[in-house]
Amino acid sequence: MTLESESPTDREGVPSSGRPADRPPTWLWPVSIALQVGAAIWLTSSTYFYQDDFLFLEQARTQPFNLSYLREGLFEHFSPVSRLLDSLLALTTPPSFELARALQMFFFAGTLAAFGWVMATILGHRWSAVVLTVLFGQSLVLMSLLMWWTATANLLPSICFELLAIGFYLRWRRSASAWQLAASLLAFAVALLD
Image 1: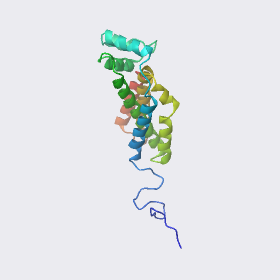
Image 2: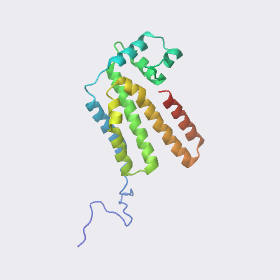
Image 3: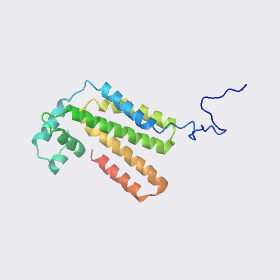
């Protein structure tokens, strides 16, 4: 008597579907990111703007949007991307926390996708890459940023673009594609602006 598994495999451990057993299904990546965004929305549901958020949003509302505004420090931090995001929020009066939350979750999802892409580039399309992406997404490093608008605007876009720069660089090292090197340098430059 032989025991048969529920999904038949050949000698190499490849299921009859043709996908190796050690590889997660492709649909799992967007589903895991969506679930992590849902968890982040739930965990941060009681947050709102803090004192320095109101200060920077008032500056965005009252100052003209120009190069000197973008170069103005945020408590001595150079962050034109954060200034740009504050200006976007200041278009609504009073500033919309719903829009801020949507922007936070957009950058959170983008950061998770970029991290997952880097992990899949380094490790291959394996379960370990998915697990590391979930652990990264639920880490205190990222979750604490989502509790405070200014922290999100100051750091999360930078982390996202840094990961994109790393991912494009790794792809360029494998393929020597000029466009991937250019994309890596561009993503790195944007990361430095935040």
